Length: 134
Ligand SMILES: [Zn+2]
Image 1 (cartoon, helix red, strand yellow):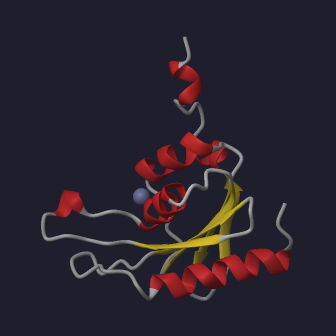
Image 2 (cartoon, helix red, strand yellow):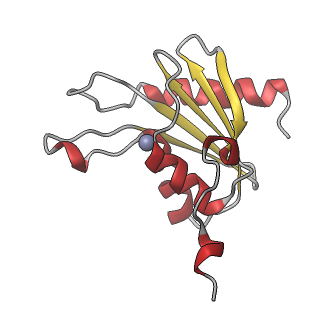
Image 3 (cartoon, rainbow, N blue to C red):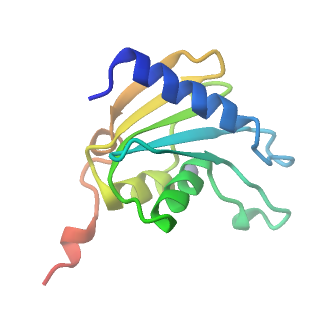
């Protein structure tokens, strides 16, 4: 469980990450900050591309950075957008791969947390690794 100060810190980190968003097409800048069980924070920002489908969301950038650095145990992820938009379906699925219990904090640019819940709550009935075990 994260206390209020830890949550604020994670949201603040996501706000900073939002500044690195490359979103010239949608102009929808997203920042994320993923806190691992080891206490490390991985930042993410959305990165768009002229070939639109090749774009990637801030949440997945943070998760892929963490996993590629050997971290797979996540405590929480904060996501910041101008209006408190929630993670898309693809990002929910990627988060679900590693844990349904990861806390998701959705905040706006003022740092106000508008939604708070687990990945399981964002993706009920998730398909996951256990489905593929023989
Ligand atoms: Zn997404």
